[in-house]
Image (cartoon, rainbow, N blue to C red; front, top):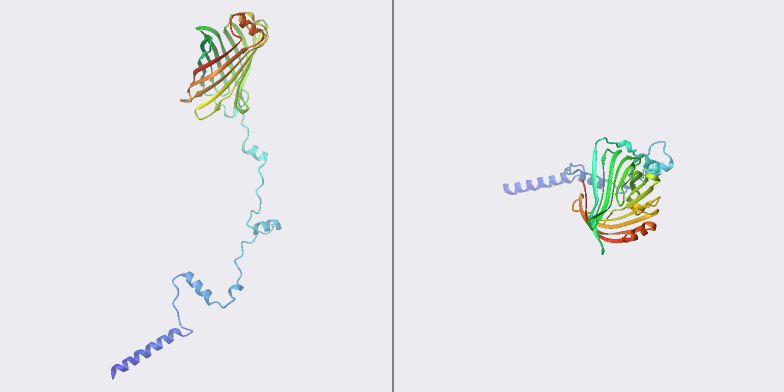
Length: 313
């Protein structure tokens, strides 16, 4: 009889425990996750209670703001708009630097052999050179120029300049000095005055006037441009114009426009300092200079193929 009594006691105890758990005031287990607690709390709220709560308000605008600034603040835009960039702002950010601002007194030098070439045509062939260089600082330099040519083993023309140059602008120098002509005809000495530099659109310009003995005058203008076809392939057109104030019979030069030279050269820079090239040149003489050339058996104009080497150090 004892076994049925034990079973009855166990069943009664289980029923009492279940009633205690389901009673309204009983203690319940806390959720392990705080987020679950929030969902549980929200679930306990009566219907419509969530609609009565106000959403979190954005940061209140500062006192003293205008209605436009408050509207911009509410829209999430900058309260103070960024002003447009003006020419005054650009000038302040990128001021012009005077040539003397970065003047360096260290002695430097540069030598450029721009043309060391063979020239050939149907009737003649020869060699030509054109070189320039300088030694000095950033503002004051001693310049030299030399150019000339020889046809069929005979020196046709040769000239040399020694000039003092001073930087007067960011890309320009004024030069003054002497020029000595060796050929053709008797030697001539000249005083030289000119400008040289980089014109807009990267044209390299040399313009020089000369004053010689007996009131002789002359002028030379040279312009060239370098077009980079690739990082190493460079196309270089060049134009040179020579004028004379007086006729010089001994040297076969007439007054006015005496000669015009043009060239097209294409070089490949094996290194920046070393570049072989090929090209074409044109030379024409005018007026009395042309008649002097024909009287000595020379052509008034000439077209030539050229091949040479350009180097600097």
